[in-house]
Length: 149
Ligand code: HEC
Image (cartoon, rainbow, N blue to C red; front, side, top):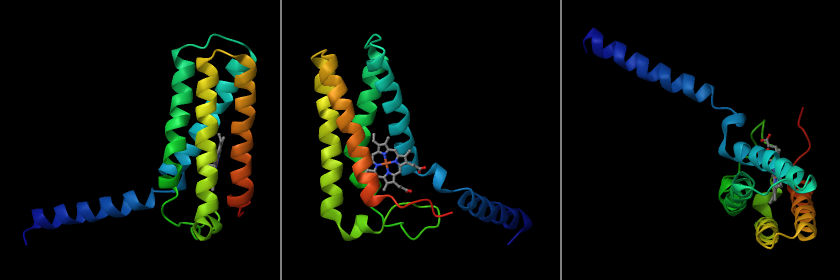
């Protein structure tokens, strides 16, 4: 092997090692999805409470939440509960039916919120938001472990 090829291989191997090291929990799709849920729901409820204009940005935020709600099963496909920085409970994979029924309820509650926005009914929106929030909490109580450190 000539030196150029050797150097090339060393660079490739180093790149692989470094990129694996920097792959932490905080850049996982699931983490990103949950953080987006929290951020968007906060903005959505603030807009409803202040009765501001329900513009395209407002609807886009709800649709983003809706898309995530449909992907939750997929985001929890792999059992990574043994990872140190994961707070996913092993119960998710032992009791999949219950977990899937909660993701389904969650998705349904976002559909209700979308319907309330289409109806332009503030009271219905407030009720829908409370149910969405209750569903976040319900799943976290059953399937999200307390902080490990
Ligand atoms: C069907 C179950 C389920 C639903 C519904 C759900 N979550 Fe979660 N959430 C989890 C689990 C499990 C974890 C822990 C995941 C982990 O540590 O990898 C979590 C983690 C989080 C985190 C921490 C993310 C991180 O990696 O730091 C936030 C923030 C969060 N959820 C917000 C929300 C909000 C807001 C909602 C509702 C709008 C919601 N979640 C709905 C199961 C759910």
